[in-house]
Structure formats: C-alpha cells, structure tokens
Image (cartoon, rainbow, N blue to C red):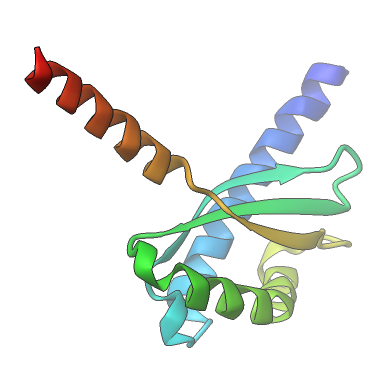
Length: 117
C-alpha cells in the first residue's frame, strides 16, 4: 500500500507542476512572471502543503519574479482549485531553485581547468 500512495503522490506532484506552469503562461497576467518556470513540486505526506521550486531564465529579474510569484500565490491556488477538481488544494510555498546557476558554475570551473592544462 505504501507504494501505491507514493505513486499517487508523485503523480499529484507532476500534475501540480504542469498545472502551475500552465497557469503562469495563461491565467496569471503579470509580466514579471513571463520567464518563470516551476522546476519541482514536493508535497507533504498528508498532501496539505506543497513546496514549489521555481527558476527564471533571466537571473537579473529574479528579485522581481520572487515578489510577483509570492503576490500571485493566492490566485495560483484558487485557479488550481478550479482545474484540479479535488477537495483540498495544498497550501503553496514558493522557493527559488538555483540548480541551473550551480550547474553553470561547475561547467565554467571544469572548462577553466581543461584550458589550464
């Protein structure tokens, strides 16, 4: 039974990720969110809370995007309630995902090491 619940959780996380990305493109009309993309969703075991990791394609606009996504979180949650057709939509918490910046730093270091030899 634990495997079934894990599978259900993973599917729900994937659905949340896809729906939030779709909402950012269609329903949320804030220009600061044009280049924001959700990269990961993690649900609490009781499905009551969701941590949403996001990134922006332009690191210079990260601050503006953070303010915009936090102010739009209520709208995102209410829009999710309309499309998900579930009894309870989890509370949303947005965090910046710096994975791609870290990957770029590592690649730059590797390139400099290769050139240095």
